[in-house]
Length: 94
Image: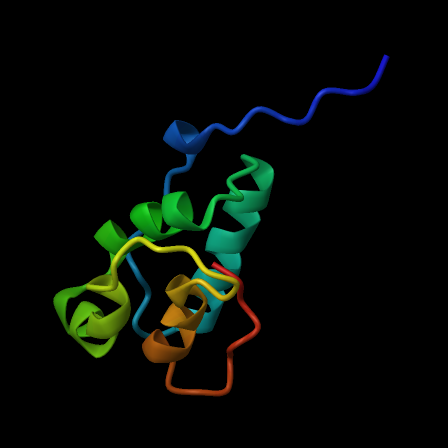
């Protein structure tokens, strides 16, 4: 008998509002929650993150926010942390 994969529980993911003063820490916290609740789908991750971002942050990432939901090899959501952080923090995979 093979072990069953963990159940995805996106409804249990409770994100805090985006931290403009510590965005890299916020994205690290989000990634930890996604791992805890096995949220691996890029579209679902983006849908959970977008409501937590402030207007000015959404405007800085408008091309990602407005991108059609076509998930290619490199989904547009992978660029979101780079747009929200004024540093080299780009290792986060949304």
